[in-house]
Length: 112
Length: 111
Image 1 (cartoon, rainbow over the protein chains, first blue to last red):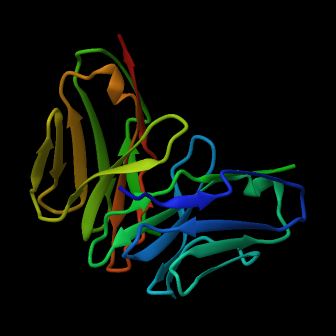
Image 2 (cartoon, rainbow over the protein chains, first blue to last red):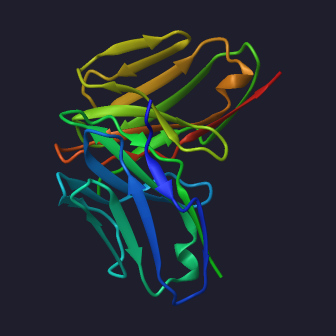
Image 3 (cartoon, rainbow over the protein chains, first blue to last red):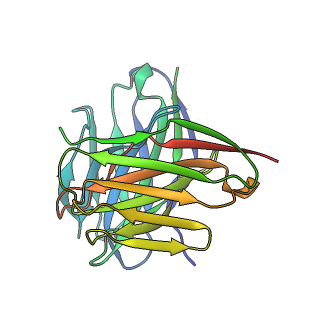
């Protein structure tokens, strides 16, 4: 069965640089979520999209933005990177009408 | 803000022993989900509970949702080494679908 695809899997950036993370949800899933997980912590909700419209926003810094495109893939753009942005970033998608979420393998971002 | 408290943070058991993790919320939940995250992996959906007092079973795993829809538990009978990982409860408070995760319980199983 198709799973959520995230790219890249690993990313190393320097402080003040920008990064773009991509997410390809499971086909026919209409909602995409982004989470940030620090070491030893639980995932923290950043932002979600339903049918390409932003549906909810969590603790996402103003330096971050995201969008969902016509093909349903989503991108998380991160600017002016800080050391504290180093974390695992997960994308998840859920099927139409359901709340269960299917997570991608994550992108590990390291800011040096 | 919305918060889900999960205990214990760590649990070390001998293979064959039982394991339970608990989640509590100060406010009523629309539903609660459980996820398992293996070391180095991503959260994997296990189950969703919606109804007050609901009990669901998956083989050795038993999930419960409290009558007041403010607490939930996951019980594993006769743990195996394949059960190793961190178990998260995750609450949904409204129809938006965003998950508020508990802190997770890291389970280690000694063979």
